[in-house]
Image 1 (cartoon, helix red, strand yellow):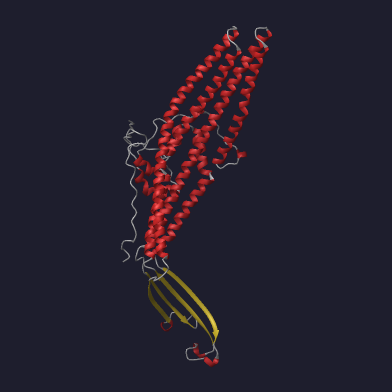
Image 2: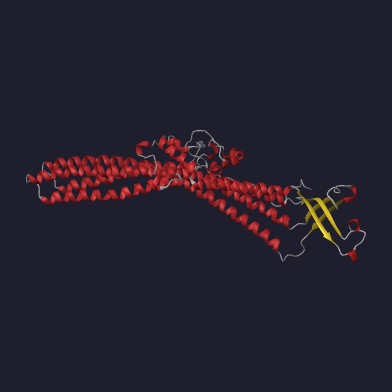
Length: 481
């Protein structure tokens, strides 16, 4: 009876999306594997150290680690329901009975006597219908879900630190571009002042250039404020107070674009993304609750045993005359409960339907995430090429405008326009570079972050070792059509 199949539906992993790509007309021939420490592909030692620091000290990650241990302990506690419960007790009392009721059963025929009782009780509820096994399955699935949530927290943390570092580098680049423009504008202002002193240009032209310099300087406080706030964010992500600061500083030149970029088939993606695996584990937990609810509607069987010894003295315990024991079995079936157990079964079935829908949402969101990132990366390359060309052209325009003004061929308005174009192009180039790095980080995050390859093992990855085969990916070259 104990080895019989458990009641309720057995869990089956949902089928993977039967599509070859994420975009219309896209065909991915195979998946490329992702390293566990994917951020090392950017070849920035400062970033590597900062992420390692964040992993060691971030409180959200520590909380996620503790949640995994809680769920695993609860699953182990649920597993204890398959075994009998033993309880030992010892009772010692001294009492007096009324003399008028004294009979031969009183110890030594005295009205005052002592009784020492030692006994062992055993209670066991056989898992006849598999309800306990279903509860164990549900608890283990919940522990699995917590483990994947921990991996999601790890991935989010490492990605957020990388994105924050890239944003800091972007702000430093924008500040440098603004200062470079201010320097150029100041040189032009000095030139115009000299020409005004010689009577070659009018004073309003000088004032217009002074206004342009002041407007450019006005941009710096906002950028510097954003940079300070970004540093505070990095301190928070790595478990520091803002006053502690962050030892590393970042420039866009300190990053290298990973080549080639990874990509995964949708069928592999659902085995790699922690959020999808969490949704699948929640579905498994909900499915197991159906069997537990069905088993709760069937007859419940329990076995008990009690054995011990009772004597007037400690020395008399465990002699043949003082022994006692009982064996009992019980089978109970609820006859009427106003449909409570039936409704609990229906609730479990509805919860499973809900989990199915949430799983499908997670899969769709994951595929959308990858598709969005792929589109963004393609746009980033075009935007960066255009921004570099625009910056070069704007820089050349300033040089030509200054030369023409020096010869009196054009007005100051031409120079002001060229300077403004140069500023916008420089900022756009810095932002385009940062966007390409940031979207590359987003691609690693969207593809799951390589948790199955990360070493050394963590408590969460220890719990997931048996599932690594599910996340295996191909190592063939990727062909997009």
